[in-house]
Amino acid sequence: MLDIRFIKENPELVQDHAKKKGYTVNIAELLELYAISVELGQKQDALREEKNSLSANQSGGRPSDEVIERGRAIRDEIQQNDEAALAATKAYQDILWQIPNTMQPDVPVGGEEDSVEIKTWGEKTSGAIDHLDFAVKRDWVDFERGAKVAGAKFYYLKGDLALLENAITQFALHLVLTKGFTYMTVPALVNTKTATGTGFTPRSSDQSDEYFIEGEDLTLIATAEIPITGYHADEIIDEAALPLFYVGYSPSFRKEAGTYGKHARGLFRVHQFNKLEMYAFTTPDQSLEVHEKILAIEEEIWQAIGIPYHIINIASGDLGAPASKKYDLEYWSPVDDMYRELTSASNCTDFQARNLNIRVRRSETGNVETLHTLNGTAVSLARSLVAIIEHYQNPDGTLRVPAVLQPYMGGREIL
RNA sequence: GGAGGGGUCGCAUAGUGGUUUAGUGCACCGGUCUUGAAAACCGGAGUGGGGCAACUCACCGAGAGUUCGAAUCUCUCCCCCUCCGCCA
Image 1: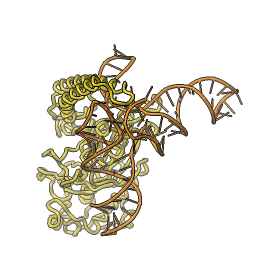
Image 2: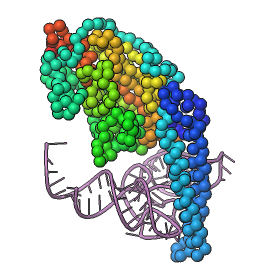
Image 3: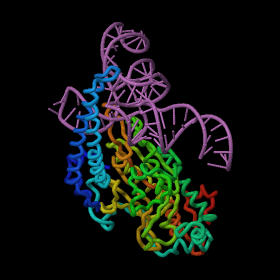
């Protein structure tokens, strides 16, 4: 969520950015409800002050009937006001939670088609066999048995393709580790507080993309970003420790309801995939630079593997609530003759951190402030396999192994 | 899952209804002393909200309750420890 005081000082800005992101929120109503909440809170505080002074004057034994009578009256009044005060607080907070993060000045305004290409790398080629046809012929992937065992869009990876997935993970992990990241594995299920704090919709929402465990306060993670964000919840981190870099490996679960249109075939969009995710906790003044660093690592990975791509600066309408700016790395698909999303890097500034109460203690002043969080995909495995099959296939049905992955495939050059 | 024991301001602890809006030790910051440091002594210091400020409110795992008054009593839940059960 945003800082209510920031909203109070910049109502037009917040309203404008929310609109550009495609969110319908009423800032004027929010501020009105907030004012009511503060006013009721002040009233309660005054009553509590009197209550405290009454009991502070007692030194043991039973106070006079008068004092008890006054105490009862105060207690009842506090209780009566409490309902309205809590309702007012909830009313403004309900709106506050719906307000998306503000954006950085260089975010393009508009919908998906307004995202701006800022860089291209590699050669666009054309004409390749669809990854699913290619892989099924080699008995490398089995969606039919996935459906039998779990449901549509679940799958098995088999043999060399499963081994290649492991090789990609190992290669990317070792590369990221040279950049100062700490490797962690994470809980694949998280509680509601962690999921919603990271910016994912709760169980109650019909738009939720997450799977929920019935009868438990548990959500299957859609990305390791969720448990890593929660890792430092309710902590105050010394400035000297920042930036903190983590790289987490986890399965990712997504319902992907209503996305059965284009590009739904095969491994590109599935209900479960493995992912290696980079994550950073930074001071507010470090996050812009770290965002570029994370993007640079993503580029380094995909240049090393040898997949042509471009980088786009995601337009406002496609950013989502938590991100203040987002880069996508889209690889060039010689099957579809278009770019398709492969990885993503977001600067969520203090939006997630405020939800989960993650702060930094400044070295010089000792002041405490909300820190910044960033996340970026190192490799998203199912999609990585699609890209590699499309670009490294041979006409005879064999697959070349990208040179940097060969050490992780026992030196094999052809699969 | 069962039984028992616990969760207190960074760490360690005191506190079983009213000068506790939480004491003490360690660590931390400032000062005295010292050539400098250590030690000793003096003082300061939690997080969040409201207020221009003085100041004030909330927070002792979370929530609810009893009471004029709750860290302290009651209930529910969460987490940790020990033992048992189950199990990679």
